[in-house]
Image 1 (spheres, helix red, strand yellow):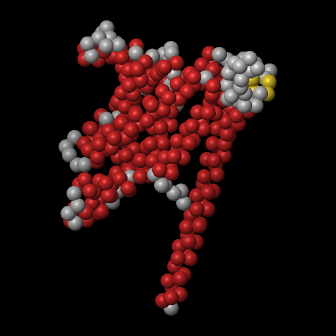
Image 2 (cartoon, rainbow, N blue to C red):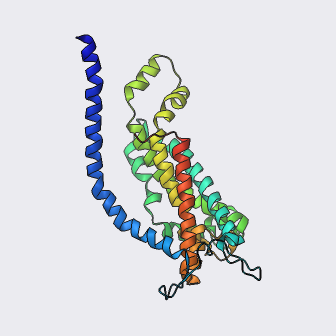
Image 3 (cartoon, rainbow, N blue to C red):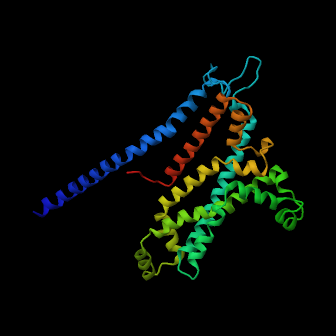
Length: 308
């Protein structure tokens, strides 16, 4: 009887899990249909126009060129594909530098802030509210505010702290100035996501670790970080998606006036809006989509997250 009971229990458990999975699929179907209608059709049209030479003002008058928007060289040796444009690769470099540095700093600072506000101390509720103020400010407003502060003639930072240094005028320093603004604004959002993960961890686990004599540092590396892996993945994906699509901070602070300050989305805007090249702008958007997808897959693989 004992053997029969032990073999029946796993089968029953698998049946319950299968029923839950089936219910979850049915509940997700309306959401998937909505996503297909809202995002699927625009994505299809973007892929469609990326294969044509089309103008934004007259999209019906188009010429099929295949992958010519991506890579094409005329008989005279003129490179027309955006993958042959040094400005595009400069924009990719700027965007990746902005993303890697800003997201890394926001993750470190967000983790520190989340660990602090997760502990019990007087004024914790006020601190949790106050830390969201930079994130609540619209990006355009905060970018313009920091542009004034960076001004070398009257800015608090540019003139008062740096003694008249024009950070935004030099392409080699402007990218770091914009990274600092993004870190100032979005670290609190990262801290909020990490804090949500910290509060879901069982407290009795840490009580047992304290009784076993494990130090706080050991608890952090051996317990907190591994258990925070799903929350960190969500935070990193959200922030990386925003950083890879950066446009507003650079547009407001430096205006994207030179190739040294272009982002990928600014390059796409120039092709689509300024130059009215619907096909070229669509192909650049497809390239941005592929880059973002590759980075998301890298995150999921690196964090060894399984979607069972």
